[in-house]
Amino acid sequence: MERVGDARKEKPFRSPFFWAFVSVVVLLALVVFVIPRVRGAIAEREVAKAIIANLYSASAGTPPTPKRYGATIRAEDGSWVVVDYRDTHDGTAPYDIAFALCSDGTWLISDDHHCAAFGFIQSRIDELAKLNEAAIDVESVQWRDEFVARCREDGVQDLVFPATLADAKRALMSLEKRFVQIAPPPRP
Image (cartoon, one colour):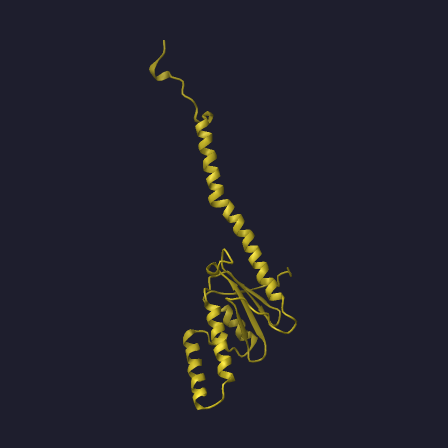
């Protein structure tokens, strides 16, 4: 005689449907989380290597040329800082990273999103160079003073015309999106 509640129940761990479900969940986790992170880490290293190779490419005593989103900051004392930056907007990096090489061999890094900040700073530096090449008359001096005031308002005065390398480093390290000093990376 069979009892109504005594029917033999199959344990869920022995069910092929359970294992199929677990397999699908594991596969989805791999596709959604693990594989993109591994690919992102590989891409991060490749982008960092490209930036570092670019910064190491300059001959002794001359600053390297930054890429599209970088800037070459020249201090009045002849020293310089070159910032090379990649971000997600230009399609060359899956994340944001900036390296800065100083004329004294110091390296700085930031993984914050600076967007077009260094392009903006470079445009201000280029504009200052044009003003300095212009003939010195009352109008050009007035224009330069207005330019200095605009840079002060924009908060980039210390990066556009620093007096010393220390001033340029201090300005980079005090940005809202900070740079930190690192040991020189190995040459690629």
